[in-house]
Image (cartoon, rainbow, N blue to C red; front, side, top):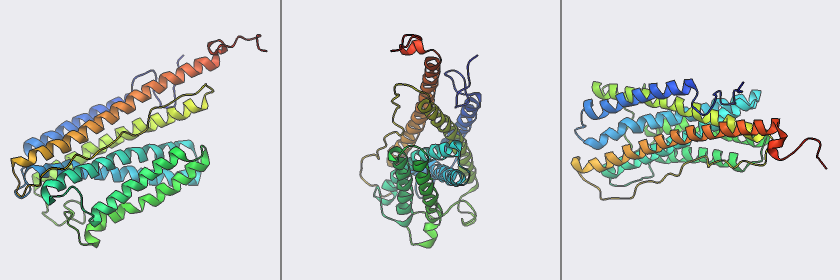
Length: 317
């Protein structure tokens, strides 16, 4: 009888829960894209590039949620211990870094035609970059810290301290003068900041990205557990794939003074980068999870049958 691995699945396919989440998140994402491009009105002042707003805000929301998971899981790990809490914190940190990178990239793409520059050191942008760098530092600490509980405890402290920057990012537009748009949704937003159809579109997009966050966390958590199982099984060594994907901001281009069709390339680049990275990241996690399941099964068979390792009982020197 085939054993269940640490990821909770069997064989090389996705667990049924992840498969169901793929379908639900995919359907919600299709609905969100239909509303963004076919139903939501074009902003009078910003033109079509304003539609980047419908993925930029959900990316920021899900990045903050991922960092909140790191915060809670790190506290639980320091308080109660347990590899599961540590694995969840690590998985959430990596997912948060991916989503945070896309948040910064889509914000820069929106800023170029609207502000005329890719980046400005405003309070919101600066605090957002600091937050992202803190969790990049978390992943670097996990990569280079001593193995075992000591490195996990150091990382947990950093994960807790890093989250303290999240409320600073959120309230930065209220605490300091900032060129960044003010809050348009939530309890601190002014009534009527968005018209009804824009609010509905944004809420559907937030739901879709939240479901996507759940999928990414599940995939990365299961993968982290499999990596730990591979390390615990005696073997000659396993070289895993790199944990993060490379990111690059798009090259600069001429600024435009008024909204119009000239903003379409920026819209295209923002959505293309977002979906290429997200789909690539999901495919990477699913593929590596399947590879590690096969590696775990091979190592288990090798441990149970010494002849597969080149050893014959009774012939040892």
